[in-house]
Amino acid sequence: MIPFLDLKAQYRQIKPQVAEAVMRVLESGQFVLGPEVEAFEERFADYCDARHCCAVNSGTSALHLALLAAGVGPGDEVITVSMTFVATVASILYSGARPVYVDVDPVTWTMDPALIEAAITPRTKVILPVHLHGLMADMDPIMDIARRHGLTVIEDAAQAHGAEYKGRRAGSIGDLGCFSFYPGKNLGAYGEGGAVVTSRPELARRVALLRDWGQESKYHHVVAGYNYRMDAIQGAILNVKMDYIEDWTEARRMVARRYDQLLASTPLMRPSPPAHSRHVYHVYAIACPRRDDAAKALQAAGVGVGIHYPIPVHRQKAYAAIHVEPGSLPETERLAREFLSLPIYPELASEQAAEVAGALAEVMGAEAA
Image (cartoon, rainbow, N blue to C red):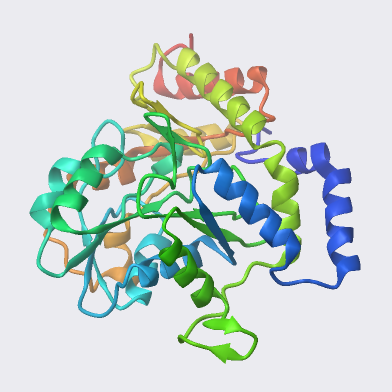
């Protein structure tokens, strides 16, 4: 069996360092925020080429606080995509605003900048692109549109730790960048975690206040805030993993290149990152017209697969009240029918990638290279 994800393999590599970090927290008696979290915030801000990082308890909380820090509230609109995990849209609704969807580009699978201006209304406050699967959205035209219209840009970088666009890191281009450290992410905690990065000190201060009950100091609450603080154990573990994130990322990229070579002779649409981008392959997805048959056949052959995502947010029952014109998101709906995610993680051997590609090619009636 080749699992879709193998977190145990990564843990075995860093087990002594993790044990030491966790014991250090337990001995300190400081279990929420504190020096371990502060140390991680400093390192992650530097990694993202941002001046500030505010660690929180999940990627969803990061998005929620970024929206609130940007002044989003009831009656406002936020332009985003439906081809994303539901947290992107849920956070917009938490803020009281309304999501407005635009379709994704058929090649990069990220927000199509050519569709943004038609979606802008007097109520638009934020553009929220999603760096899907580890590839950054086309940020230059998005930022140009936002600046011309006086809008804030919040990057949903939950899947894009270390991704780059024209030499600039994910989270550093928009006004705020939001990350998730869910265990399966490229940089994952051993539990929940998230962060907001920004180079604007006033936004960083606002996020820091909101994550900790709006306290300027203990029991002095200056705004109505939330309990979105990061646990110290998660900060300590993430700090350990920061020593490895670049090596792990390059290992993922090597697996992706292997898949590209092996699947080149098949008709499957593979990730197509622009030359100016560094794709970090949180997910290696293909567009497969016979997706469900292929998924079943691969699983029967002992290959774990995933789908990111089978139902776009605008088709989810929980979010059906958000009006979407029928047929207005054709690429999103096509990809939801065709996306199939193959196993990818730093420890995946070249021989295993070849086995995955061979099984997939057999299903497609083609030969792997």
